[in-house]
Length: 189
Image (cartoon, rainbow, N blue to C red; front, side, top):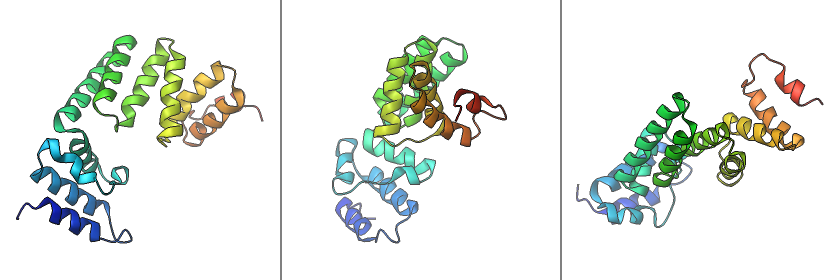
């Protein structure tokens, strides 16, 4: 009620990690967004980092807004949606440009980067796509089966069969190959 950001920060820091839930994170982030000016948002994270990935979409959205500012989050969303439209129309060059623009506004939405890699693959820019996928999987610990599947396709094409099959195994376990024997065909044991 006093809108004291220092008091909110202190109260949040006193919650033991053992008992902290994504709800605590959401209340903290929403409270800070409510009382801080956008130019002061970084203060909210100056002593600790929120595990926004473990929470719900509302926590993620609030985190992104607090970390990046509402305008950047909105712009990222706009360009991602535009990229999806171009992708559906099979205009992959425009799709990749818009996905990459979305990433420039919101680096925390990893699917933006994954979709950019997919569009880049469609226009034959496999090395650029591989660089994005390696960053997602190896550096940012983004472990979706789709990212592994896409990287596996590129690695297979580049002749790195063993690495590709490691990624394909993850995709196969997530049933991305469906009932086909494609994994067995590509990766004979």
